[in-house]
Length: 617
Image (cartoon, rainbow, N blue to C red; front, side):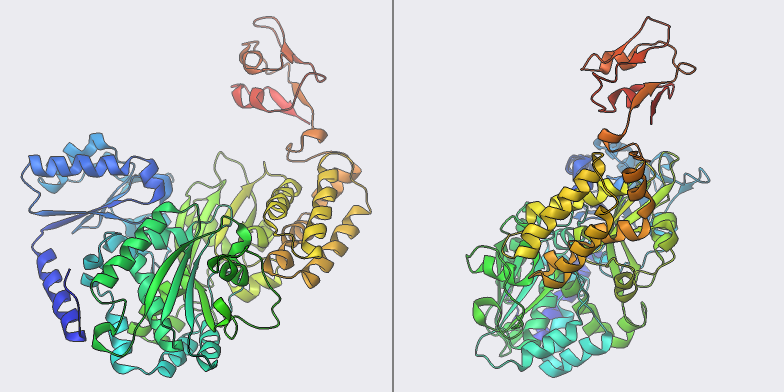
């Protein structure tokens, strides 16, 4: 790779790469994201390469492995240009047909197209799919354009042009003012204004400053940062470089979650490539700006996603938060001014610099600008990564993009913002994806996790799950979080096991208020949210558990009883065969019975019964 010593050399290389790639008549993009990887995408790529060589098309067709394309439910995904043809659920066995018919014969293979479940029609392009139709992919669209591990791909589609523009034409204060005017807010949690954070760090007197990318994504069901960092790490690096120029930093860290080995690998490759081209290091592009980045692997604890705990971890200390009386923009990493933003925040910066603050601010709401990447998971038809304009109503994400409920069960709730977020009922689905609105509703945008639950979910059990997670992940440094969350979990457990009392509800509310006001860090302050929102929107379930000793969803084992409906039971014996506790007995072709004393309420018999004869009360 050539070393770039000036803006002119960067643009010259971009032109060369554009000409080189233009020689290919067709580009085939195969998703290499984790979902598609699990669906044998690497084997698909190998099979395609063999077929392209065998049929003499390898000089005409450019095959690239991309980052996550979003629609994980339909992996392995493939996009063919020109034509924007999208094939779904492809396997290595499809390689010959794809090469011979589509790439050589220009014929679309209908069986590999997405089938609209509503109309039964085949859909040819991504733009026409319901999953993509209402999205506004500003960041995720880059995943489709580049090979995850190729700096040349990134430069060819305009990569590092924003950095060159900033270094050539803009002073640090100009960059900060542009970020402020854009209205960019942090995408990792509370939505703090990015420009204000940068401004405070830039004004802090120090001979050394740092910028950090927080990729310690620990929320259950969330993988937005993973998708971006694995798919296009150079976009994040470029954003960090621009931020470093703006605040006067010469060293940066990408702090990646320990459980993300591919993100770590791709980040390291990107750093080495950028360093090799002179885009990291001394006198970048022939200017006085010097900046380098180091990859730090996470400490394996959820609390390390908190800013001061993360910095302690980088320093080689135990990942514990510290009091917020001094902000990290003044006293951060190694007690130097430090700017910490998450992956998605940094990824937004290059486009703002290239397209202008008004372009970014034109999307979204008054207080929440731009787009937001969400990880859509749970009891829903279409799962995956989605990017939507801020302000889109929740119901559009769930029903229009997500396709609504699966298995014919009604959707009951959505949990937004991870363990620190809240559970909202369907009555709140008209609320927009907006930092301030969701905060007022008791939830939060957070990093963007969105878990959909249907009527088979018990909301008290959901609150119990998140409290258990937070109890395990609490560092234990402060009393409100260490003891308060533990006590809340004890009460919730009592309610789910039939020991609930009416006075438990006001006690939970009192504990939640105390913890949120007195805990040391964001983990503790927001830990009560799952309980508070389930009490706010699903109070009737708490009352039913306590007063009637029943779980309406049939989830809490201590409060349910399994039985067999004689009118539906055919005596097939399937339930008895799978019961490891020998709790089911009966004569063949005669109704069976369940011995409630032996029954462990595992539910296996119910899932095995084809006649819906197992009931829960």
